Image (cartoon, rainbow, N blue to C red):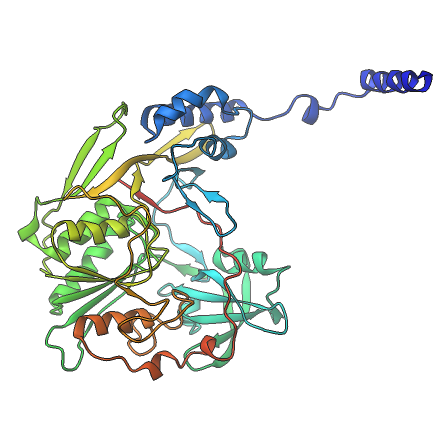
Length: 473
């Protein structure tokens, strides 16, 4: 007992005489700026969040000693009524759609980088060793990657003469996707013909655009020209490019349209309205297209708002639409599909089931202290003109390319890209969409002449982190 008392005294004496440590005894977080940002987060949650009733009920239990970057997720994950805010990841964790982040107070600046966008999944390229491969999702026009001959669907198998492994894949991924490297030497496997080659890249200036590709396809034996548009994000600052592409398709005589949204996670509702208006033409101007419903206690916006189509001066005047989609298609992409169906325009979805994001946010930007913020909590639910909004579990593809289907071609790893945009022989999504429109049979030999179907063992190893899809006004 005496020994125990002595030990307690020793500990007490040590505690009393220890030097003051500011980082422990007086934490630097939250700072005054943190608290101001948290107050801003709270205000919008309590006034506008779609599930604000539970926020008001539980707000006193939220941990306001956190950094502002952690506070929103920590608070919303405590709620039980907001299951539609986010999705469940493969590991069972939940990612929220609502977000707040620091952004650059600038728009449409030229990018200084390599011009490569990588696919969300990583392939395992060796059965004997832990070697990974990055699949090129897109290559931006006039970028160093395009000038070096890199194409969508190429597989990056070595970086600076080294393999991509579990120990280095994240840094390598960022060196390409986020342009953190100053220069790159890449070994490429072209999936279509199994050709390998090397390229060296240095950073250069280029401009990004969600209008990734468009053309008119003149299919032999089919009496209607097919307009094909790849659109990767509903970004309102690029509406001019979107409308220019649609105008070109109309001028070139497109009567059918294949809209490729397989990598489009959503964006501006205004851009979705412009796209749909141009596809349908002036005859549909002022026709209700989308209804937005907010919490009845929302104090900042109308509880119900109706958004109508407009006259963009472009009239493709389609009477049906084919959409290439995937699990990465969400938000405004889904509004296009269900909005058209709400007007009784037949829509055929080719690919796989969409994400199922039938909610959206009113996005605000504000400077607080030294931080310029973009804040987007979920504030509304979306319905089409018929009042239907039940695609929260995803829109099921009419032709599912991940399994056996009526077209006769499938790829269990869809939508991992295999070839460049517009490849009517090897792009399974485009091949199936054309077959669906024209009723022509597909030659399966062409779609199967790709490396990952034979030599390699594709596997989804990791999904890169994303901020989440969104639909905003």
